[in-house]
Amino acid sequence: MLKQIEAKLNEVKTNLPDNAQFKEWLLNSNLWSWIYSCFLAQGQNVSKPCIVDMTEGKLRDEAPLSCYTFVLAVKDIYMDMQNDISMLSDPSLKLFKRWAKLFGCEDYRQSNPVIFEYGFVPCHFRMIDEELDEAFRKYASSREDGIKASADLFLDIIKAFPYDEETVDMAFVVLMYCLLEHGYPLPELGLTERDFNAMISECMKEKDYSNFYSLLGRNIYNRLDAILLIEKQANEIL
Image 1 (tube, rainbow, N blue to C red):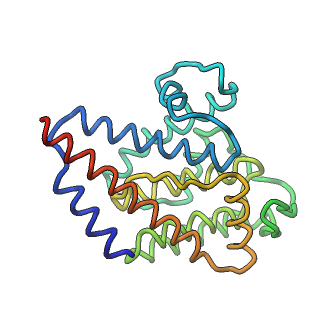
Image 2: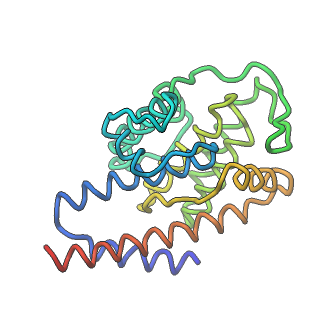
């Protein structure tokens, strides 16, 4: 699958219109797709047009204020990431803590809970930094398959469970950075809260991340395919 994805990515890069408006659309649509994936996994029923409006600072009656706050936080982090991506900075514990601060969740959990949604017990809270640092180091040494390395880091962060409610959100933030760093567009994962919890639970129970890796790869390919179609249409007009 990786060869097909890389071939499709090269095709997308070759057909990218030399147009500022199109590049701005691509930058924004990555953000819209990712926020939609996050909301779906959270069990939030927020439409895509609503997400677009919220990224532009518009309040919508159909979405609670907490969703608006979430959108603005993810947007701030997303824009903050662009400079680090351009400098080819690997994700690290230092960057993770900076993004967490922007997200408003600086303090790690101070207890050792059972994570019932996913059916596992994370590391002792005093070992969180050690577990996260090891996860980032593993990512940095696994550059051949960027999608697999990104999926592994996402799940390793959930496995360490550094925060309470914000852990999965922060894992999504890191996954967003990893995919962008490797040059991939941000896909829609298409997992409802129930499906997402079931997949994470299976990954933790079986200690096998292959199903999430496959899902991520398929959706990246589909996103590339959709972008390529829009590029070809844009090139005919421009």
